[in-house]
Length: 308
Image 1 (cartoon, rainbow, N blue to C red):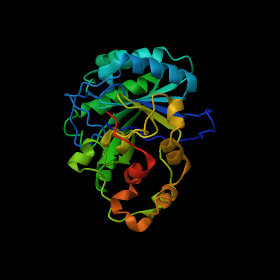
Image 2: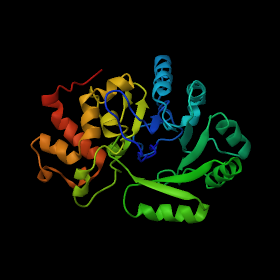
Image 3: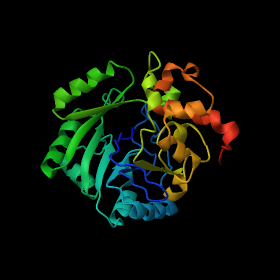
Image 4: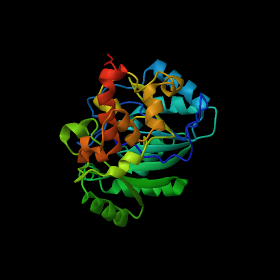
């Protein structure tokens, strides 16, 4: 399952006064499918889910930082409705919810109602629908979900993952066929996508990335067994590195990784290592792949140690 890409309208503040625009929550890694492009290697065989202690910590931290948007992703989120309901119903502030799903539950309108009515403050349903899903998703699924969402005043869109430029044609065709908004994102080399080699292929190194910072500024994620992090991709799912995630948001904010990844451009972080653009390859045009390259270079000198 691919996470929703969120653009930040806020800034991270100094000390512990932190503005979080969006919070990505992964309740578990079990999924109804085993897609080649899955960033976190979800499948029907995975059993990891949020522990009791993690649920309590998430509720506490969300009530403290009060993000305006909560993004549910997985795994297939609708497998974990009991966990989702418990978290959302214990929040003491105003928020809206985005659900990212493969639509496997959406066999008919009554089933859709039974599932989606359990998600408090649902504002947006994002159906993962691309060449990695399209052959296995019933063609009526987008229409059923769109019809339900329209009737309930919930926004609905299709999310298309792009492995190569021609995949944009799939997105255009889906927009015309289903008459709804379509967003797309390039696949990062994370999780199963790295194993299968379906990440987006860059022909040349696009040096505009050097002027960017972590694309998740304004967003914090929680991953079962990992903790809170502004990383929801390569470093979280390809490695076991201390310092990339924290047991609380406060702990994360005080980390060297958080301060550098959200405060410095990739170019500045590269320069700190004594490296130039000449050290990079076309694949480093992807922000998360470039961040992974930089952090792995830091391991011998910055005290990163494998955990577990």
